[in-house]
Structures are given as C-alpha cells and as structure tokens.
Length: 280
Ligand SMILES: [Zn+2]
Image 1 (cartoon, rainbow, N blue to C red):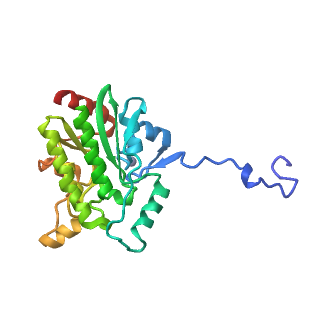
Image 2 (image 1 turned 120 degrees about the vertical axis):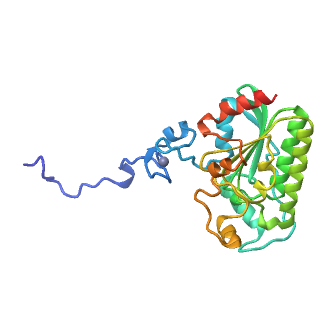
Image 3 (image 1 turned 180 degrees about the vertical axis):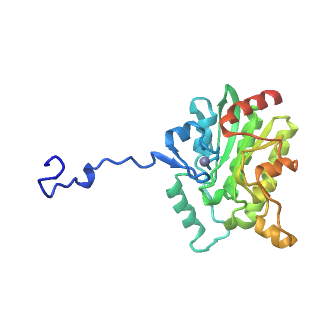
C-alpha cells in the first residue's frame, strides 16, 4: 500500500515553488458576487458578464476603450494643485496631494486628451474618482476649461466623462469658482455650435452635477449610476420625508427628464460616434 502512504517523511514544498493563480486573475462582481476572469471582464468593457454591473473605471480605461487603437495626445498632463488656502485637516493639503499622486500615478482628478473615435476627431476630458474622490479643485476646472479651448480651436466635439463627489473642500471658494468658469467656457462652445456630450458615470454629484455635467447638448449616463446634487440623507432630513425607490439612480433621473438616454458601456463608442455624426 505504499502508493498511498508516504514513506519518506518531511517532504515539504517551499512556498516559492507552490503554484498559485497570479494576483488579479479573477474578478468578483461587487453586485452579484459572481466570479469571472479579469480578461473576460476587461473585454466586456469592465461590465459584469452576469448582471451587467458597470465597474467604476478611470481615465486610463475610458481612453483605451474610446480612442482608436488607444492612441491619444494628452493635454496639460503635468498640471498640479497649489495650496491657496494653506488648508490643513488630518494632514496638510500639499501632503495629501503628494501622497495621492504617489498612490494613483495621476496628477489630479481629471485628464484631458484629443484623438480619434471611429476616425472622428474628438476632445475628451475624463475624471478619476481615485484622486481625492474625483473632487473638483482649480486644476480640474482649469484643465476642463483648456480642453474646451482645444475643442474651440480645432472645432472638434467635446466629450466630458464625469465621476465626482463634488467640489474639493480643501480649495473651498476656489473650487466653487470652477463651476462658473467651466459653464462660461461651455457657453462659448455652444455659441460656436460645437457639440458637447456629457457622460455621467457612478457617482456624479455636487458641484459637478450643478455645472458642466448637466450642460451637455446631450446628457447621457451609464446604467445604475448615482446622479444627484446633495446626498439622499441630507435631502431626507431637509424635506422630512422618505425618498422614493431608486432615487438618484440614472434610471430615475432619466424618467424625470434630466437625461437624454442611458448607454451601456459596451455600446458607448458606437453610440457616441452616431451622436457626433448627427450633431456635425
Ligand atoms: Zn455581477
């Protein structure tokens, strides 16, 4: 019976010899908890193959999904935040920015670029929620304003992809000024009759919703995205009433007339192309 009984004792496989699946090979959907291959998930535009949950992705993934062959030229890639208010919470604002840059390899909460989407020249600005909650400070406002300037100069449609917790507390009034600045720039775009499409993703809230995100010639959203100004708790406490089911979801916002349509991320590139062609 020596086939089944190990005669030699003390045979151990060292840890480095053990075969294990490499990190990040599997993706578990946070919504339906089902598991799929990360490659399969990525090929499905980072949406769940079982329940279509749209994973929160950033500018890198959107640029790769949208631009032909993933090729684009970034605008103002090195702009970083100042500290006009000498703001300190649990740490100083410059320290927080520095730590976030090191962690995320991003310079601020938005990246802007131009390139081709199905051979159409488009200027795109896309927010990154990983950078201090996608908060809008002076850099976000300025980069969006400059991206719109690029649209104006080259007469290319402008696409804004929003994902934000709202204004950046550490820049207080300077953050709020970005609402007026970006809105004024969009008015120039409108005067020149250059199309602007705003894509709202999960979540789009606060000063971002209250300015550029809702000013598109078309305001579109990803399925299930949370879209609102104040959070549900604040609203509930203010009006003293319970909120209806699905409140502030993209579907609810669409039903109440604040969105033009909801777009599945897998169809985003084709839908945008059709839209830009129609608006040309
Ligand atoms: Zn799922």
